[in-house]
Image (cartoon, one colour):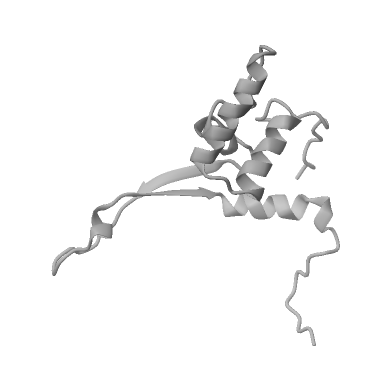
Length: 133
């Protein structure tokens, strides 16, 4: 397979710039801040920027989360399906049997192909089992 295409250093897709990316990383990954606190912080940030005619990197937590969900991870797209229990319900049912569940996944075949074509893994993969003592 062809090697992945090189992206320019200033490509922060789907973020508009590095500030949006770093803000997301800090709030979501490092601090794991609650939606309510994210909204408060973005509101205060917005107040401070209003005098300059500017706005914070995100309107609220929903805007932040939708940007995170739009973040591409490699060349393998995400798929989702709704599944629900279709088995026998005689003899009593529990609540989970009637609830549809949304599952999100990536094609494992494409994921493994991407791993194998990544030059970072060259000479790092053992293609046969071995015992390490």
